[in-house]
Amino acid sequence: MQLAQVIGNATATVKHASLAGQKLLIVQPLRADGHSPDGDPLLVVDALGAGPGQRVLVTSDGRTARELLQSDATPVRWTSLGIKD
Image (cartoon, rainbow, N blue to C red; front, side):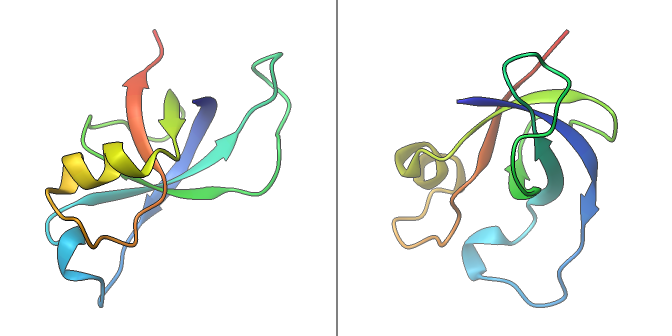
């Protein structure tokens, strides 16, 4: 799990069948201080309704992605787990 800030939405005209109807976010991972960037931005599947400027918890757990998308053959790596208050 990692804290990240939503910096925008992503739109794809062609995507894997497991992503049909899913919202995609671009997030910037943050260091432990909660403010400094930590690496490159990530593409995240969001089922929570997070928006730009919000902080979210993201995970690269494949099992979570497969359960969320109900697909054993999804190419998704990152998904959102929660929105930080």
